[in-house]
Length: 226
Ligand code: C5P
Image (cartoon, rainbow, N blue to C red):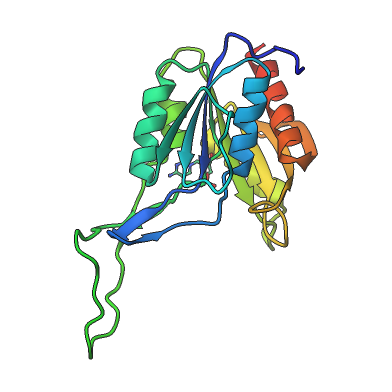
């Protein structure tokens, strides 16, 4: 049995990827399966926490991984569910891949192909940054807010360089930076993650299964809460 070192803590984990509706049958989405978020929920529950999982279109099974599962589809729904659960949470982990933009005007009726007309452009508007709001508002005093960042290295910097800049920009208590692309991250069983604090200093580095990553992240959460 796992140590019960999260006993008495109420945690909220968002997992999966949001879908932004275009019409009643189509959406714009992403490749997140929710496996890392589900592993975070499972690990927290095994260590004694009370877990609410806000589940956005998961491909992973949620069987037994949380005390409460709130299914959501869009960013608007995820935001509402996370904020409602966060009002009495000690820790909120935003592991979901949240769409930065959504179609400006989803239609009530299915968009039709009209003979002789080309496709209509899709206008996008920006979604609220839920993580940034949680950091700014601290819906419960003393709440620990954790973000995730999926990064790729490029000519301007490594995965870790981009992660550090984002940690400082986002100001979350912890930011878990994971390397994606080239067979890593989305849809894979294993993950490589750097855990950074609010000023971008490295608190932990782990390469392993999503469950191992989850346990290292909860260790880091306990350490920051002191
Ligand atoms: O900036 P970026 O999207 O990479 O940041 C990722 C982190 O921010 C994740 O924790 C994600 O859940 C969160 N996020 C959010 N609201 C958005 C976009 C991202 O909470 N609209």
